[in-house]
Image (tube, rainbow, N blue to C red):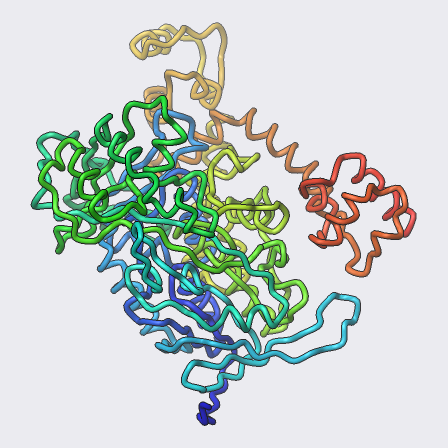
Length: 635
């Protein structure tokens, strides 16, 4: 029996130092709370156990939102990227997404340095084995327990007022490469084997999920001349609104594109019986939208090839990440499989591909604040909530950390709704929908995506970050100035008119644009597809110079004004439903006209608003009508 009687007193304990844990701990500490962040290894702080990049389609939106709220991920990748690219630029601005290759080791070192030098924040390498709670009387809010502390493997007790669980993929983790199974966390790091039992004892329902990662190949054994070079953007756009774009223009490292082929697919098919996935060895459910190469070959049997991106892991290593070829096949099969790909005929594997299984929760047990419904002071974020991806994890960690801190400080917690950000969509989907696989964010999940662009994340969320206390007065004033410049310039363009003079018609002809039939405003002129803010300068020579980010907003707001106004009307209707709150003491069994399935789902999810109730699978529009009538009668 461990006789350690050491007791420490803090305000908040954050368990896990991955992307979610870092954001949660920084939020709490920056709001003045004494915070300790626990990790099984300090080498796992902001670790990238899978792909060496930040951002990407929809994920880039989340990173921008994290930054707007006062988080760290955007700043950190701006310091440590080795290639940057804006994706989907051939499409509309709603789906433009920034993506950057990271130097994985430098990203970890830079984030650790931030944590180490943040006031009120302690880093502790220790495994938390127990969450300590007390029973409390249910006062109609459903709370039956409250958090009082945590206990580590060595027996030390940390008394606290709130705990944020950001355990990632470490709980009872095991890694599988064919028949070989190691009981470790990602990248060979120690698993957390004891906390799951404590969570179960608290009444928390756990499930098993799976994810995986491809092999790392020695770059000196790859023939890049047989592949297609993928370069970064000429002009680099930063993730953080605080980063000066001129300060990050630098030489970039290339990635490369190659493809699997029929030989690759035959090798995989011939060895499916040795894959833990198909042999039934793996218990957990994997992500549908990030399948292993085995899954791709089986599910998309009509495809004769699949893309494979070769991505450098950093400037000071030869390791290459083989994106698109995640696998759990045995090592001997992996060698044959990777060597069948063009350009990798003589490659050497540095780290085998593997699948990893781990414990996580059904996020339906959480409110949109990311607090457990029946436990005061217990919050959760990241892959522990059944999501996938660094960015999704960081976004949840930030919200969980903010709300844990606000709760301790006696302030009102925040909820981002679906009309405010991708983080709001992500959390709402997690807590209101039944997710049977790791959740991945996609632009198609956001119904108001024209409003939730990556370029305007600060205009949407900076105010909230400032009100919470994570955005400085200096950054806030900078934001207000930008907002004023945008509004003034849009107003000016709408109220500056030009006539159908011969000189104007000549300019339009040179710009391959139709002649004017009558006078029009510069804003109307800019709405023409072939014209933009820069080109109409010919009609507006006296204009004052403006920053590029201001010009970008002016152009989007004017060109897409009609579509934006339509979505704003949709949001207005959405807000009405979100503002119709459901009392916490409601008894759904009293609503006789509710269908049995709807009653069961509403009792399980405990929605806080009619809007949230309407998004629960199994609750029909007719059920919502019944609920509204009941609430109006009760009022």
